[in-house]
Length: 116
Length: 111
Image (cartoon, rainbow over all chains, first blue to last red):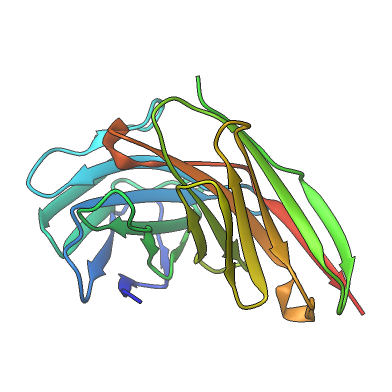
C-alpha cells in the first residue's frame, strides 16, 4: 500500500517556541492532506484540510495563525505549531488521500509533541 | 447533520468472533472506512465499503447497508494483538473529501 512518512515521531520543545511537522507521501500524489490531533483515549480530531496549492480549510475552533499549514506540493504538507504552550502537547497525525474518491486515507506515523 | 455512532467498548475472548457495529447519518454518502488503531500509533486501514454487502479480507470482514445507514466489522479467530481501537469513518461527495470519524470502539481481547 501507499506510504505516508511523518517526521519527527517525537519532539520536545520549550514553551514559546515553534515546531514544524512534515508529512510526505512517498509513492503517490496526495491531492488532499488532513491534519489531526488526538488526546489520550480520545478519537481523532480534524484540525484542517489542505489541497495542494491552495489555502488550508480549518475546522471550527482551530486557530489558523497558531497552526500554520503549508501544502506546497503533491507530496509534502507541513504543520507548524507556533508559540507552543503546554496545552498544545498532543499526538498530531497527518493523512493523505489521492485523487479518486474511493481511495483510502493513508496515515503518517504520528508526532508526539510535548511542550515543557 | 452528520453523525456516527459505535459502541465505546467491547470485550471478547481469544479465538472467538466479534462484531463491531457502526451507524451513520450523512448526506451525499460516498463510502465507509474501518481503521484499526493501537495505543500510541496512527490508524491503519482495514476496509472500505461503498456498495451494499459483505467484503471479506482474511480474518476481517466488513458489511454495509446504505438504506439502513449501518455497517459492521466482523473479526474472526480473535488474537490478543487484535486488542485495539476500531474506528468507523464515512466520506461524502464533495465536503472537501474529508472523513467523518466515529469515536472508536475499544476492543479488549482476553485469553
